[in-house]
Image (cartoon, rainbow, N blue to C red; front, side, top):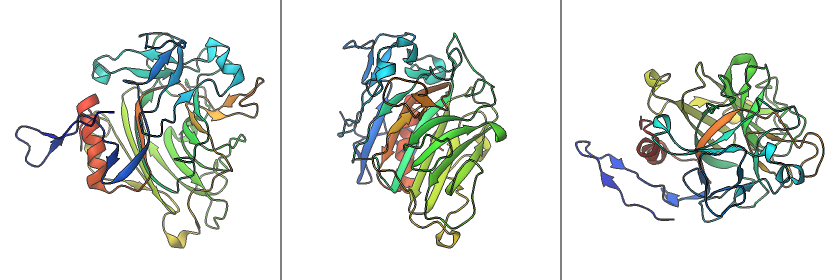
Amino acid sequence: MINTPYVYRSGETGATRQTELPAKICGVEQVIWMTARRGVLSSGATASQEPCLSCLTTWGGQSRFGNQATLENSAEAVNNPEYWPDYWTGDTTSNLHPFISFDRKSFGNNTANFLNIPYDASYSKLTEFSFSTIFRSRQINPNSTTYPDNDQGANVVLFQNGNDTSGNRRDGWGIDFRTSSNSLRIWYYDNLATGPNCDPGLGSGNSLSLAVSDWTKWLRLTVRVSGNTIQANIYNENEFAGNSGFTFANGCNNGSGSGVKYGVNYPTNPNWFIAGQKGPSFPNIGNDTTILNGSWDIAEYILYDRYLSNSCIAKIWDYFDYRYNISNV
């Protein structure tokens, strides 16, 4: 990976143009970085083919740990292109950068698009981290959607770091679309929590919800966790321009007096799922290889293994500004 030096923006005193992500920000390690600009293999080929439907088999990690996401972790999915996500060229909405598209609209309950990174000690049990991603509801034809659940009244997952197959979020942490509130929910599970149940869909732990009225526009989500504190910030140029800046929403159980004890509580070997949640048959052949699958476009995401301050988060946002024209605010 080439780390491009800072180049100062003309007329913006003290601001920088972060044209590429360094392996460390503020001395903090980058443990997962996936961008559709790199490391995407279509139909098992050695080079990307774009655009293509039902073709994506591998999304290679760009951090020093690798951590690539594949279909090879599921015996059912790897042998059936119906499960394979799409790889799409960029357009003006993504500042001409490609992205990965996941499609649940034309599939039954047991046939949906997803990618998975198996357990890896470099990231899988972090209790302190910062995470940021660029995503939206799927906008690729066929099967463009208005909502990530295709307006079918179903809760669907964007990311999940855990192994629970009950749908009740009883391990790890994750991000999902909540149909009942038309919101994005960010949560982590703590089985030693004695405080209130923050969300009816979460067995115990800490969560927060961010209301979104238009899922068809690219959204920048940033989440940071440290111990029993979780915070999130969501932005796009259209809907959230009036709430710009470093305004982070707080989890409902933040703070030592809330009853949350140790922050994220993980199973023995948690998986990392993109656009789905581990099903009871994963990784073998059978029904429900994954569940709670959604229709998503994802351009990029990054995970650092510390809680980053606002000034450090600004470096990520400046990079997204350069790549996707989403303002660093």
